[in-house]
Length: 77
Image 1: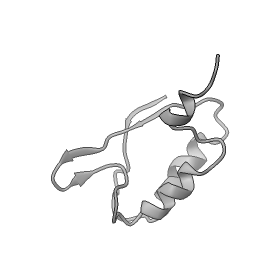
Image 2: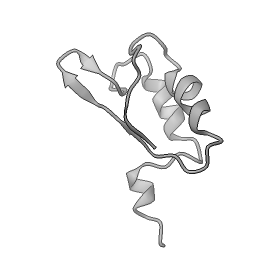
Image 3: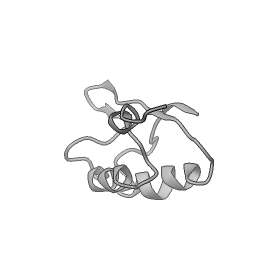
């Protein structure tokens, strides 16, 4: 579990999601990651529209093994 996770070099790595975060969780079994979103007007830790990593976030989101709340809520236990 990675709680209150963040990209601490935000805005500097356009492939942060697929080259930094994903390799760290891909072979770990089940991983749960909670990203910080905003701490102030100029303080971001997750991607947003216009961010240098915006497209990479979309690539990360589309990976078959990555699930977001909308996909998890559809799973029948």
